[in-house]
Length: 57
Image 1 (cartoon, rainbow, N blue to C red):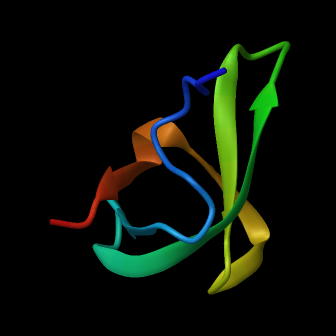
Image 2 (image 1 turned 180 degrees about the vertical axis):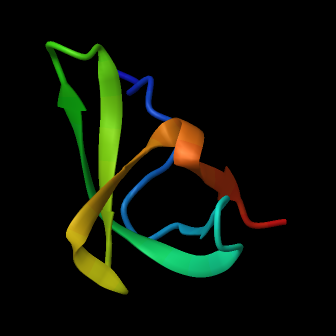
């Protein structure tokens, strides 16, 4: 079964607001908001939604 989230654990992405390169630690689906949230290794106490992140090209 394929997940519908954009990013996987261990993937390098950028935080759109700061343009900081970070690594996805883990992700989960937030059922009541119907979207995925992610935690990153560099900021473990903060979570981000998919629209706040972008692929590292």
